Image (cartoon, rainbow, N blue to C red; front, side, top):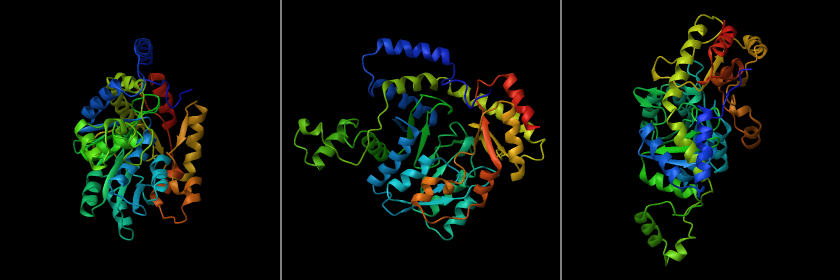
Length: 389
């Protein structure tokens, strides 16, 4: 069988041996120096000023929206757009924090929202923010979406959990908005088993995220910032400050194990991205020969860090046949993320208003995906290839 991911880590044996040695020699496992080192290294890789590590990508999504709400950049009942082809943890925080979710349709050519689909929604529905999902390693015209958001004073934030390393106009995905989230769950571009990150260039948001991550206290802030907060809130001494809570927050702290694994896997990230892109080019060359399958547009990208291999049929009737081909060949497959999120049970329970999303419906009805990762060997590649012809 060809699973969605063969191993938890790239270079798994080497990583496990290093982890065992780390566990033997360390006295502290709560968030500390390894986490700080990983934050610094990831920020440098991404080209952002700040990176804040979390215990999961889902936690990062919730923390980002809570931080923006604490800073009053968004408020209860604000309309917040989101890519309608997405994952549950992009939409649930919008609902949980009392915001109004507004789906933005996705274009099957790109698997993503575009400036055209965003403009179409803005004709009738104003937005305060847009939480875009950069889906499966691909992007729409994210540069134009950024410009459209600036023009309309819409706060742009990105979920980049599936597109780590993809580039458009020489800019890495995740660097187009105020902040972006990342996931290091198993089968993502790099794994810390569980783990997530938020990147931003905004120091105020960075400080707020550190408080949101740790129960709303100031423990992880600079001494200067701590002094400012304690003075502003009349905290009388260092003793009281130890249990002073300033903002709404959660316990989303990672462990030193997360940080250590992040540092180990970060060393292999360039190799991981290159191999995924190489595999995708091979699969794409075969899809181009098949008149029943749609080629996902990527010519506008400088780099395509393909999270998986998306199979998008040109007609709904073709999908079941290709699903059987993959299944009969022992290749594990999945739906196109959560499909049209409006059809998910949680969404129907909490939202009564729905929108017409023809592009997302087509992707949902006609598509699925299988794994794409560096450990696919020649036999695996040829097995997948045989299902594409």
